[in-house]
Length: 99
Image (cartoon, rainbow, N blue to C red; front, side, top):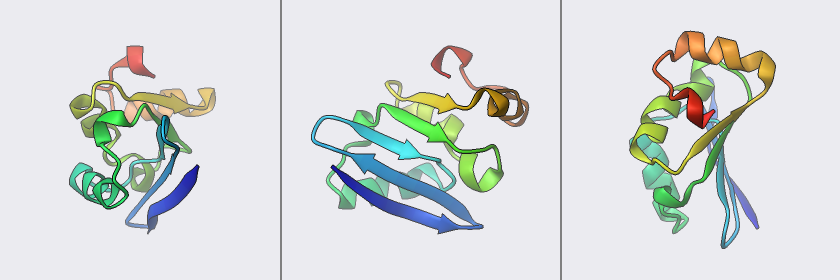
């Protein structure tokens, strides 16, 4: 298993945690292009990311949640129940079946 911080600042946060069989992002606060480029350096295919865990709904943590999950259809979103409504308020087009 490995964990790599892809971005950590007020401009965007994203962390990768994965193994040979499981690939997860914690937050997606940077562009999809940046996420994909940083995963490529780690030899991780974005299509293999199965989940994004959202810590909270601030924009520097959710910037690309909608676009990443729209592009990479096998990725689900996990949030705390208290964050769910706030996330949908900020990103109303999210597919609720994937949260």
